[in-house]
Length: 358
Ligand code: XIL
Image (cartoon, rainbow, N blue to C red; front, side, top):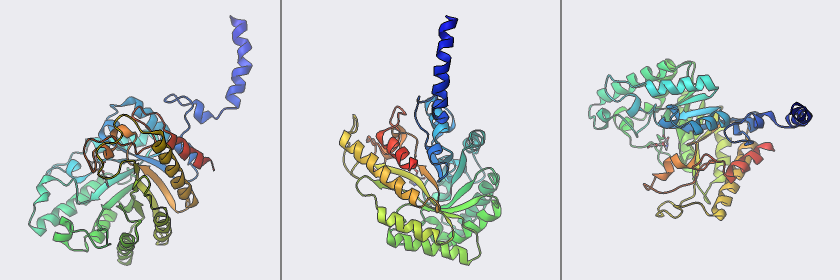
């Protein structure tokens, strides 16, 4: 028996010598390459983490997350409605857990989000009095942003403030505080979180009219002498309709403002917007291949702008828990991410890895 083992030693040594160690170390998916390793000289690779991952109730996904990602955004737990449910009530437990998870696993946390018109606390929703809205606005930003200063890497300070035509969305903040609220949010966040990067985040800002609105917003903040460090293009796109030209132009224009550009909520819906549920039992190969091709094209584009792009974050970990199974139609079966419902890498995963090998 001893002799036999010895005979194998040179063979094992040879295998170890000629293998990529980052692949060998993987226990979660034997031999699966790593996104964060592949793109380590280009940009951070992130995922939005829902409560199930933050609470570590899904251990299979947990090892995938640690192996694949070096950035994370809370999918919901730092939104005002959850973290600040009552006037004087804050619930920090899950957000704190995420921050600790990031610290332990070298995952940079992008906190999301301070000022947004959705997922607001109930007490705010029908508030008539402008002074009360202002009191919420000020105490929310300073309490939450200061708690995590130096602990999170960045904040999406304002989320989705723009309409498709580039004008400001008619949110409770615009109605009660006027158009200066965006700049004011950045001022308050900068004061509360001087060690944290501050970003504006929105969807569809790659499209020319909305892009012009975003540029105007950033310039206004800068002209007021207030810090803004970056802009997030959410990247909720649809298979067959990815606006590559507009994305490229936006990366150029936004980085020309002297701020970082990020893709912050990437997913590619494979379902036509209002179709019923065309693929409840699995994705046809032809669509799977299209998804892989479009992801590859996107990452090749991102790599061309690796100097301007600091992070690419997917909105979720695996298809089974993507928000796109319930939006814009509830209860469909979507396949927008790189990992399938069993956490197995899809063809699209390998095409992103191939793009990254250059
Ligand atoms: C979504 C979450 O993924 C869902 O779980 C939640 O029910 C609604 O919000 N733009 C954003 C994100 O900035 O915060 C949204 O997240 C998706 C669209």
